Length: 542
Image (cartoon, rainbow, N blue to C red; front, top):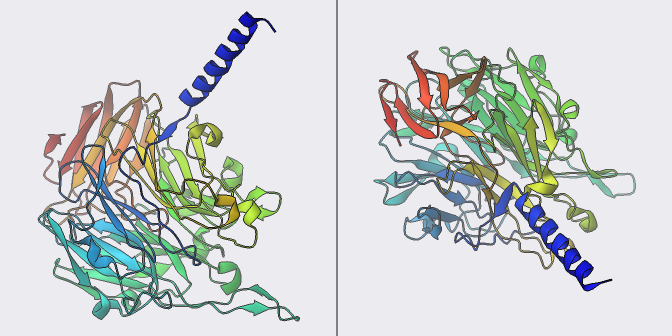
């Protein structure tokens, strides 16, 4: 080979590598942005890993909380795109004795500062006597005060939570899933364990009384399910103006207890179980739930993760029809007959072209097949003209690690949406030598224009605007967005609502419907702008 040919080959190789690097949709920047953090995990591989986005000091830069499981959790303060460990500074180290599975935020007392609740998986896990969830009360954006909810709910193994104003009284309530009490086991005729027979705690519903206290009302409201709850979402499935409850149960294949769809019967106090009538009653290993109006028909659709087949429920007038296989997002198998394990499935518009894409965090939990766990990589699907295209290999998010909770936010305020995804460090041979740190995936795609909306309730509407509906109308389509009160696996994304415009310079129409019946219409909103709105119709530009 001549010298010229060698030089040309080197150039082509460099160009190809450069082109490949440039084609990645996301760039992992966690260490660069101050997140040099490892959650070590333990033999109980599920515990911990929930991620919660929260602006603790109202500076406009989203911070986030990383649940630590048997290890200490972290509060990461956003210093204009770089993160600082503010756990001690804000008094969050008061949680060091707790076994925290996840967290979700809300301004429960409507004082203008974001508080949050942590779910604690304590019984039998060796962290003392801290078996209850806790409320972290935000004091003027300067520190958090720990308020134990032990006297409200009693001890348990709490696994996830979601916020929402279930009785439309203007104060945010919270639903808590309460996990396994005893695992149990099923053996064959030779005494070999072949399955599980868990008994589980009852779930809890905490009704907020004027921002001063919580009262447990799960039995009164008919939602004290004991099916090994692992995820839940308060969301208006049927568009009747109140928040329904979607509940995912784990170990359904063994317990015979499926997922639950509880219809809110407001103004009557309570919910009705309509799971069997609506197609939501699958018996599975329910892990996490994400939502989005994927077909722009003005209602919300739902993605449910599982060990094995994931479900994509398209909303048809309140009935939920699974189309995961048809849409190519069921992710049943890693390879051959080895089932995959999915945790958080989140819809968001990564390129602002007007339709929703899908990120799925994955991580096998089986120690029995260590040679296969490395193959269970995260997935990313780009929505192209209503079809999900698997872009995992070029996404930059499909690393070889064991991911858990995840959240979506614009951490650097550069006008696109990024992903923070937790990682559980595991000792198995498949993971040795890998960088098993918390991952921050920065969006690097050429993005279209957008309009973003921050909704704030006043008077008789909760400050977070849970239950508010934002209908974005563009090019003859109507897309519904709802504030996230808890999503994925024990996680919560940004409460800011983003809508992609493609190459359009403005949004044709935005209709906001508030829980108190107030309707506000805004026309021709300028692109690439974050708008703040409240029930009085005031419009503020960030």
